[in-house]
Length: 199
Image (cartoon, rainbow, N blue to C red; front, side, top):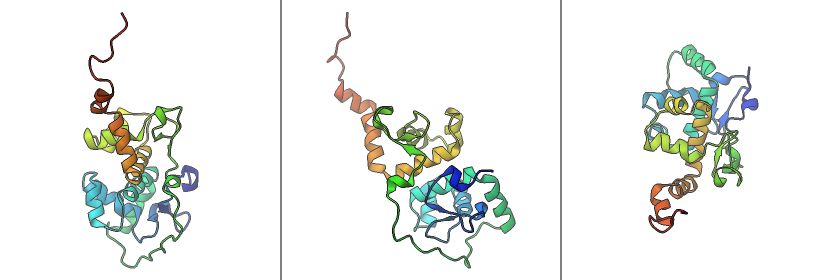
């Protein structure tokens, strides 16, 4: 069985006690991953609804929780069944806020960037799929997480969610990357008629 350390999904998630994968928390809060996952799917994958429910969470934290959920779905589902209700545990001990947070770039072990691949755009590790493609599928084409995996079957749901978590930590950068690869931008750079094909 994988351990959280093997998968290195996201430092936003805390497993405490160390082997309680089903009862994982979002670091610095008393909010369990299972609670966030249940709310996310109940709201039809609309992250803004989850953030409205827990204003202390960022969209990046929500998608990090969903990435973790897909990696440990069986354990978390069993935890939710055992707890018999999907409600916030008012008696839960909130873990102290991390006073020395990781740099945002370090928070995304499933995302990389290399000038030799995809023009240096951030992409999912081990693939040539840029983060911008996942964002486009999810927000512009309205594919759900499973829909994206069906269209890109070499990806895992965990990787899709990791890309969306990265997007919210680096939204301006990814939005600019989306624009620089848009038809509108390319038409400005290469207007029709300016460049003739070789005869």
